[in-house]
Amino acid sequence: MATRTVRDVPAPAPRAGATRPRRPLLPYLLLAPAIVLELAIHVVPMLVGAGMSLLELTQFHIRDWSTAPFVGWDNYRLVLDVDSAAGAALLRSFRVTLVFTVASVGISWVLGTTAAVLLHRPFRGRGLLRALFLTPYALPVYTAVITWSFLFQRDTGLVNHVLVDQLHLLGDRPFWLIGENSFVALLVVSIWRTWPFAFLCVMAGLQNIPGDLYEAAAMDGAGFWRRLRSVTLPMLRPVNLVLLLVLFLWTFNDFNTPYVLFGGSAPEQADLISIHIYRSSFETWDFGSGSAMSVALLLFLLLVTSGYLLLTNRRRNDA
Image 1 (cartoon, rainbow, N blue to C red):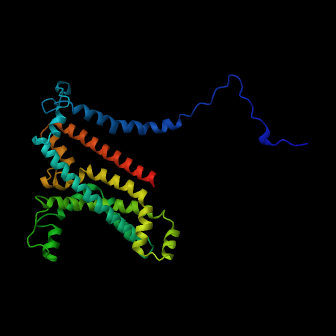
Image 2 (cartoon, rainbow, N blue to C red; image 1 turned 90 degrees about the horizontal axis):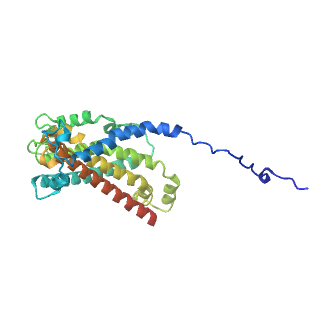
């Protein structure tokens, strides 16, 4: 006579009138503080800024926003019209910011990847070098940038002392914080602060690459550069996709570095769009136009992010 197993026993039918168990509220309660802070810090100010961009909000109406005239899209037409003075200045600032961002992100990624690859293999003193490389990323922004502003001083700065007095690479002491050299100074400080983050991310990505791949490539006769091109970089592709996007957004929106380095009045050659919006809003007291610039910048970054994600996802699906 065959015996019945536990699997053969049918499940008990639900009783009449029984209700489904309620979903626990604990996950929602844990997420509530984060949602409230996100709304208060990001969403609400964003909506307020969008509303300000539709008003003629100047110093005459700043105490009572209800008295500010509603101008609709006039602020956007003014700041986006390249034939007007405001539009031409914004376009010039946008070009400077774009060149600055591409150069800073590209050089930072190259330096971070190079350092991570060289420090991937264990050797004596590797931990000390890793700690030294991460020091610029760990320092407070204001402390680091103020230090660089002293280093770039024309007469007493260490940069001119090394380049002119020690290495004799320059005949005269240049100005670094004004004029054409201000862009180079800003780029140097940005790279110095950004490349350790790229180094940290790439170094973490290298830990997930199986060592068997390098051993198999070495047995096939692949040298260092061949292994780097055929194994390391393809395996780091998911990390680099996120890293480049984050670095682009951070650098394009950077306000602290130029503000502290130049004291809030950046030269024309280093007039990043964040500083340009700040000066247009708080120096001329035209908060309506400044808000329109901020919203336009937000839409541009959303467009770039969406296009980047769509392009990378399509390439991943094709692969």
